[in-house]
Image (cartoon, rainbow, N blue to C red):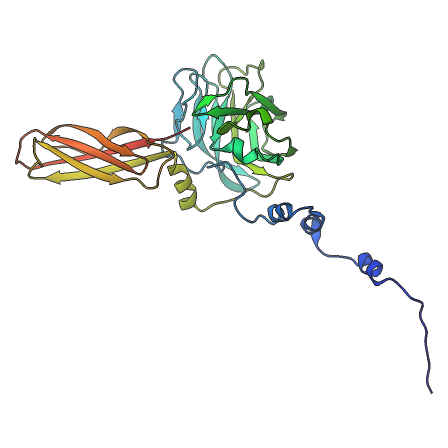
Length: 333
C-alpha cells in the first residue's frame, strides 16, 4: 500500500533564523559586527592595548618613588607611569582582586596639593586615533575614600603640551572597594589636535576636589583600545612587556671592565649595545655598583638610541685597573 503525503511550501531561510543558535553573547556581537575591524577586535586578534605596562608588572626604577616639585617628568617607579604634583608618591603594590593576585599602581597625595594625578604618554597616540575611530577605556580601581575621578586627554609635540589641549573624557566615582570600570564608544580625538605627535591618558581626582594629604588611589589592568567596545585585558609575556618598556627606559645594573694597559693618553673606551633601540637618543646616568680600582673618572660618549659608550680615565698608566658600574638610559616622552 502506498501513502502519499503533501506538505505546504515554507521558506527555509526563515526557518533557519528560528533555530536556537548556541553562539553566546560574543558570538552574537561578531555576527552583528558591521566591519572586519569590529569582528577582529571582538575576537581579540592582534595588538589591542595602547597602554604599556597597564598591569603594573615592570618597575625598573624601583618599587616606590616620590615626586620633587610640580610638573612633568615624574617617572619614579612603575615603567611608563608618571605623577605630576610635588611630594606625590607612586609605588608598585601587590593586591588581590576577586581572589586573584595582581600588581597595582598606588598613588598617594603626600604633599599639600592633595591631588593624585598620574598619567602615561602614548607615542603617536594622536595619529593612531586620527582616523576618527572611537575608542574604549577599561581598568580596575579603588581609593582610600570615596572620591570623584576624571579621565582626561592631553596632546603633545616633542614632549611639550599643545596649547589648549586639555580635554575631559568622563568623570567617575571611586569607592574603597575594587571595581571594574568600562567606558565604551568614546568620541574620537579632537580633529584640531590630530596633527599632534603624542597624546596622554591622565587619571586624577577631579579639579577642585582636593583630597588632602594621605589620600591614595590604586589602579591596575588599564587598557586603551580602538573600537566601540572594551575587550578582555591583553596580557603580554613578561619579556615582551619589558621590551616595550625598554624603548623608553633601560637600567643596566652592572657593566664590568678591566685591563692592565691603557689605549693611549690613559683613556680606555667601552661600547655597550642597548637592549633595544630606544625612542630617541637617551639621557644617561651612572649607577655606582661594586668597587673600582685605578681610574680617576668615567663618562659617557657616543650615545645613540641603540648604543652607549663609556670612557675610563686610568690613574696609573700600564697598570692593572677595573671598574664595576651600572647606568640608566632615559628616552621618555
